[in-house]
Length: 385
Image 1 (tube, one colour):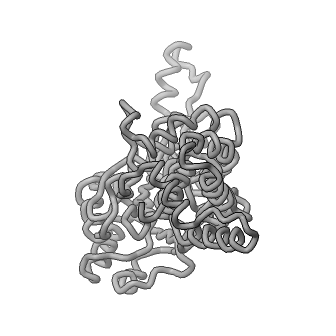
Image 2 (cartoon, rainbow, N blue to C red):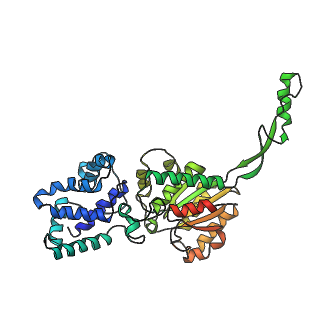
């Protein structure tokens, strides 16, 4: 095993994806527990790690299935779960043996200190702790408030409740558009003569129960397009969580794209406790390059051809890196704009996207919003129009 610490980091990533609070401190404790066990007692690694990673009865009950899914996938039948990451074959005994060989078990203070430093450095350099930093990539050991600074995959019940509240706040702030149509309303200001005369037949032609009408207001139709390409791998799950909340609050239609476009609204609108597995299923198999212009063309020419209009809102969640010809993005955004739709762009970085394609398309986008955490979404919900 060339990289045993990498294998353990991959196992920790799987645990985090399933909601367990496993951070760098927990990973280091797992490595030290494996080093403390003799090679003949490799089977005792699972109970030792279980005590480190499981923090509630639910995690404790799910541990055997999670452990076998990663280290002994041949034992798991009937369920296949893909994270979209290619990993080499794993053998727990080889991992423990490699740890003993690479890091040693010298009990002296200086050797132990050096070994702990090596473990910590290796864990910081392994896994998904890159752009966002260790505090944010490993939610279990984070020093930040996960409710506001969460862009990883660990979601607590209060996070989901906060997300639903923010989505409802955005829905309330969306201006309802006046239409030319009228609807019956008991406090309307316009008399519905036809209904009034019809109801008067029951009273001998005397209009004792007049009917009133008022102008109908309709909420804009929202379309959400989420970039799930490789460059958005660390942000796609956050965006899909937000998109699902918008589906429930706004009846939005959600599409994902990388080199092609696919609608996932039916998948996200189902109400179940396995939302994380749904999101993993959506992003599994995606990745690679990004063809934003091609995806937008498919969107407005095929999927939303009959629904785009002045009451439409198109929200794009992407970092703006496009593999299509630079001028095409401006053309496709212009085509959507000519249909009357208003376009908003939500980006995960610290600055507005400035790729060659984006520089020529700024005039077609009404506003840019930074969206990298629930804190950003809270600010958007406060000022959203």
